[in-house]
Length: 80
Image 1 (cartoon, rainbow, N blue to C red):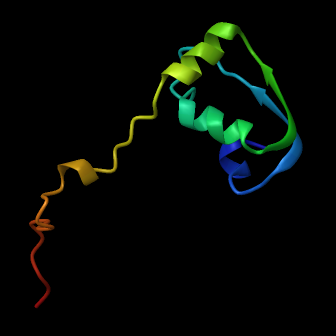
Image 2: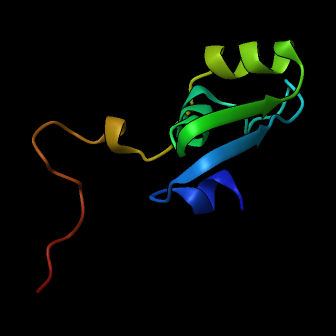
C-alpha cells in the first residue's frame, strides 16, 4: 500500500521504502505520514542520505492561497 493511500489507516508494523534522495516525493511531511501509520514498529529501508533528505525537505504547496488578496476579493465576476 502506498503512503498516500494509507492516510487515515493504521498498522502494527510499517515498512517505509525510501526513494532516491533526489526524489521530489521524499519530503518531511510524507515521511511523517508513513511513520505515524505504525502502532508498534517502523522499519525504514534506504540509505541514511535519503532519510536525511526527507527530514530536511519541506513539501512545496502550489494551492495559490498565499497569492489571494487579504480582503477576500478574488477578482471573479459575481453571478447575474
